[in-house]
Length: 115
Length: 107
Image (cartoon, rainbow over all chains, first blue to last red; front, top):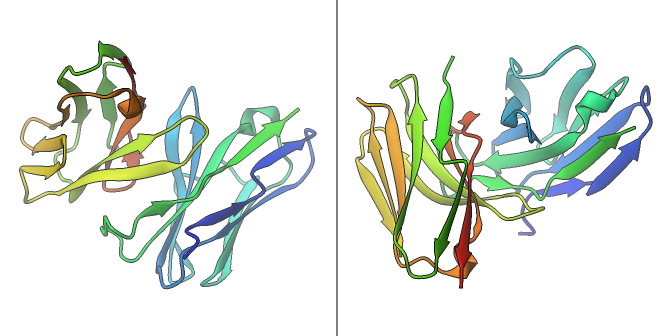
């Protein structure tokens, strides 16, 4: 398995534009997590899914952020409209079960810069 | 809300030294605590996970302990090597992360 795959690796966009980040979890993993990492706030959980259903989105900063998981092999995190303060590294992770150490794998992240 | 704190924020040691990284959390009602390693520009790599019923876990030169009553966990690294240089993060319940400790091991 190639692990958790995120795309793009880097994204530079202008303020006000729509940004879509993509994630392909490890096949068979039932949980998918989206995180954001910044110098100021560290690593924050934004939302997680179980069997494609959003379970906890309390970390989503505001209505400009939305996440979907249309099937077990694909998830998107969308920011519309984007703002400079959204600049961060966004990570996706997947796991077999919620507390499963061995199946908890992070993608390499998408570095988003909003200018 | 669970708050996770890591001290120190940065640590520099000479090669061969044993060292301890600290993680504290405010809510003792946890089901696991996990230590990760993050290399610059990369994602996180799981190192050790301690379930709430456990007191410690060991893997090679790494040993992690958990004291729920005091809200603390430590990561002990024995005989440090330059390859151990990275940022180490602790996470409670896979949900709340500390800001990390940036470790530099000098040859």
